[in-house]
Length: 463
Image (cartoon, rainbow, N blue to C red):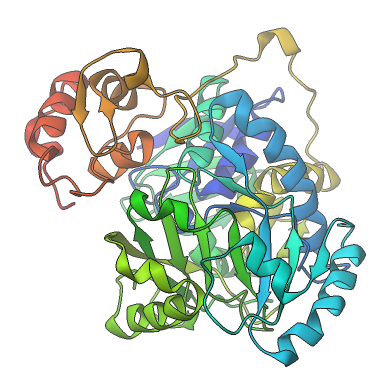
């Protein structure tokens, strides 16, 4: 297939960052295309996030990441409730487990202030224990960060993409760009299956493969070496064990293993941080899970007596640099959003603004659409703190997560519909509960098949 016309802007990569940029561009008088190598948006790195809306208190002061995380926190905190993305302010406490870590807390508070966050407060061990009485032995101090939030990481890119598509962006799925030709006015993007898309300007939001696309344009400057993070999700019955996110004192390599509630009512333990070479290695490992259980026993001992609902792993687009890699080139009419790590969820909307500014600086001219012509979107919130459809009636077909048939109908017929069980899970929470689909998968798949007018075999794939 070949696009009939030249798009003003083509975005490569429909993770949370690419979808955020697409949403921002859809508010301008432009023709926009969003390309994704997988069969859904947010189906790569973005779906395996720690689901925290960060204040950016621990970023490197003066870095691009620090600036965009702070801005993104503000933007996404305001945007999420308006479109049905669940968000919850629990705050966090950074916990020191020895005297050396405790001695570092004042420096971390100063770092937070240098990042523009003034509300971090160092407290003693007794105050930490009063906040979180279930913590393990050995706490030596802490630092409270009251504005850390939890967010639904699945619905965020879906909301961005839905708004973009509803307002004119064209979404191309299963399109993996392997070649390109940069002409004097038009860039030809060529997929592995021979499809072509033509663009005046290109934005690289390809995540784990951002360096590969960067080199196709003839540029160097960063190399992605995936950093695997494994996580364990505990049952909802564990939720009363803590009131806020428990953060470790960070190192130069990683923010460390945390224990956090989720907007879905679970508790999450993780992530690990292992640099690997395989960009597809998203399986969990015995060594990784053993490490998490060991650390979890120290942080919150009672947690290990609770049932595990799921384990998963995600890959972060780590590079040899300590900051995001944002570049542009006027001659190639190209913008690169590279090296966006786990804070990319928080920074996503700010990265959308940044991408538009970079495009304007290299020659893209566009005027905003008239506000009255923009079509708003709203998803059904998935968080336990929000009103859920089952509470006002409807037929429940996934009892663990109390998902109704109406939610499945909407998920498979929306502007950016689910195309498999993984996509359905991320849009409704169906099959994400205690039984992991053991009891409900057949009924959910049968209902999805009827609602989508696709055969049952299209839905009964690997879970």
